[in-house]
Length: 159
Image (cartoon, rainbow, N blue to C red; front, side, top):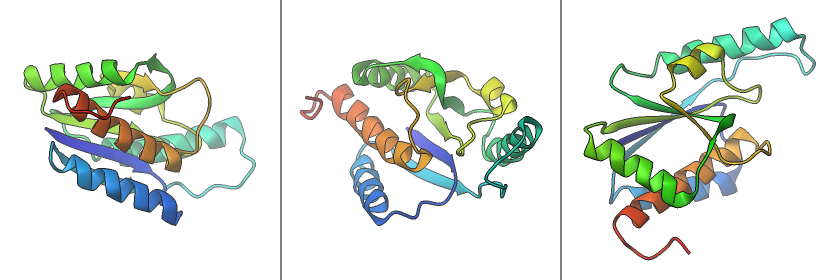
């Protein structure tokens, strides 16, 4: 399986980089993983609604340019469906079984995802009703994808 994580914003924190590197290395035994880091749109601290929409649309264009027609797209969004680790494992297993071997997870910038990206998504996934920094979500997502492969292989880890 080919997993692509498309994410907006640079990762600066060393501890997050180390955690992501560790899980990416572990995932290499199960899937090809590629993390595509896109620049976030520069914007002032306080934005009007139209300025926010403009920023999301510009970031959305960058995201969509990295998605191919054969990607199964899972957008991380607060309004998405919450799943257990086992349910995520089942989703990835079914995708592989039915020939959807290219999966793209999308993590938006600090303002979220554009409507166009949400429309392109085959499904929307929420990790919580809470808001998390998008940099931290990258680590959480990589860990959960790794956990999903371990679950699907019947290997110990998901306790």
